Image: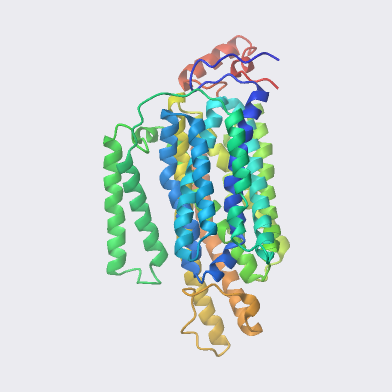
Length: 539
C-alpha cells in the first residue's frame, strides 16, 4: 500500500481508502445522530402532540420549523466551509443540534417544542451541508459514489432504528416521549470525540464575510409563504386580505432577496451557479424530491397510528419496506456508479420510481391491505435512494474545488426548502380533507358535524366509541392518500428535470472540471493506466 502524500491544496486531499474510512467514521456517526434524533420523533409525534394538546397545524409546524431552520442555515454553513475550518464547523453544528434536542425534551407546550426544533434545525443545517462538503474535499468524484453509499447506509440505519426506538420509548411508561430527544446525546458525545481524533483536513484561512441580509430576506420570504399555506382556509379564506398581505409580502421579500444576492460579494446563493445547466436542473429536481421525501413521508406515522390504530412501535416496523428500499438503492447504486462513472440513468430511474410510488400511495385508505402499502413504500424508498445523494454528486462534478461548499449547500438548501413547503402545503391539504371527510362521516351517523375539524387536538382513536372511531380512521386514511396523490406531480417534475441534465462522466480527482477533462482524454490516449493512481485511494 502506498503511503499517502501530504495534501498540497485545501480541496484536494490525497488519502488512502483506510484513511478515508477513519476520517469518515466520526462524520458518519454525527450524521447518524442527526438522523436518529429526527426519525426517533416521527412515530412519537402523534402522541407528543396529543399530550401537549396541539392540533394538526402544530403537528405540521413541529416538522416545518426544523426544515425551515435547516433551509435557512444550510447556505451559511456551506459558505463558512469555504472560508474556515470544516472540522470545527461540523463539531459546532453537532453541539447546537444536541442542545436543541435537550431543550426540546424539556418543552411544556407545542410553542416551546417548535422553538426548540428551530435550534435543532440550525444544527441539522450544518450537518447536512458539511457532510457533503467534507466528503467532496477528501474524495474524488469518481470514488465518491462508493462512499456516498456508506452515507446512504448510515442514513438508512438511522431511519430504520429511529422510528423503532421512538416507538419503544413512547410505549414504555417509565420513559415517556421526552426521552426521544435525549436518546441521541450519548451518540453525539461519541461523535465529537471521534471527529476530534480522526478528521484531519487542511484549514483555509480567509476573511469570513457572510451575507446575513440575503439569508434573512430569504428566510422571511419563505416563512411568510409557509404561514399563508398553513393557515389559509382554516383561520381565514384563501381569498382574503390576510392572504393578500402574506402573499404580496413574500413576493416583495423574495424580490429584495434576489437583488441583494446579485450585489453581495459573498452571496448565500451565488446567482452565477445557476448559469450552469446541471445545477439549475438539479435544483429543480431537489425541490421536487424534497417535497416528496419530507412532505409526504412525514405523515406516515400519523397514518399508521390514527387510521390503522397501530402503536408507535408497530408504526416504525410497518415503514421498513420504504427504509429497506432506500438502503438497498443507495448502497448498491453507489457502488455501481463508482465502478462505471455513470450516474444519469439512476437519477432517471429513481425519479420514475418516486413518481409511481407516490401515485400508487394515492390509493391509500384505512383498510388498504398492508402488502400493497409495502410495495408502494418500497418504490418510494428505491426512488429516494437513487436520487438524493446522486443529485449532489452530479452538481459537485461540474464545479471547481473552490465552489464545492457553495454548490453542495445550494442543492441541500433547495431540497430542504422543498421539504418545508411540502410539509406545510401537504399538511394543510390533510387538515382540510380530514375536516371534510369527518363532517361527511359524522353526518352519515346522524351526528352534528359543525364542530368537526382538525383545529383541536389530534384524536386518540383508542378512546373513541366504535362508530366514531371508524369515521375518524377512514377520514385520516383517505386524507393520507390525498396528500400522496398531491405529491406525485412533484416526482414527475423531478423526472423531467433529470432527463434534461447532461451527463458528464465523474472526474477522477478533485480539480477544475475543464482541466480534469483534458487529463482524462490524455489518460485515455495513453491507455488509461494512470487514472486510478491520481485519486490517491487504494483498497
